[in-house]
Length: 264
Image (cartoon, rainbow, N blue to C red; front, side):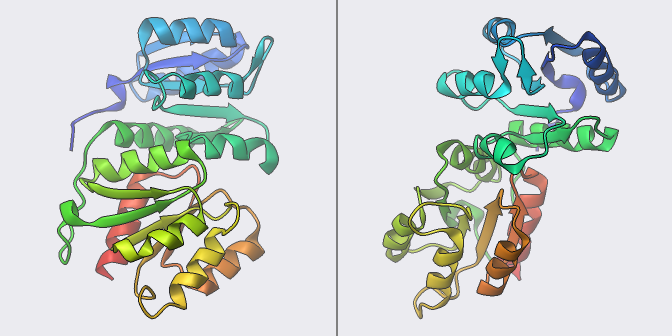
């Protein structure tokens, strides 16, 4: 694994309130993060990103000239910054408002105010995205592991692919929804990683199709989802997924889950 530490990170903190910037900066300094640049608006943040090329953007939700989604959309649309880790800090709790960030592959969504451990976890997730850490398996050669990655969000697929590639998983096939995934199953896979909410055929329906097939019922399934409805999640568990994790997810958690379901 690359020996990266929080102190190595170059962070852009985007927050309109000087008081909030000071609070967050102090929390970062507790983790020996010293390379912190600041911006108070979307426009200023865009200029700073182009100038300093940060390792992580930490952003509030609302600004006088736009929102964090405006900033994030611009970051994702630029090929030079499309995989830039992004962390949202917000008092927003509505699933409808936060789901768009989850689907855009943010590294973390922290509440306002947040606990220090929340920040530590998010920084560790950022370091995991920027580092390589081989997945060691007893029964599989990781470099030959064949993974089918299913998610209707291109950015979510990109983040998950990055995590898998950091684990030395090389053979990754992508599908934009469950219906496409079903057509790809005959190509042969060792693992399915799927979202829940997708058009046409969702993650639950895909799981049921796989589990009811004599050819594919043995395939391990990891579901990575922003779904908040507990009844839906219960139905998914009953359908036979091997493991579930939330969006945004911690790369270290995904690594542990993959080791458990592949070796178990």
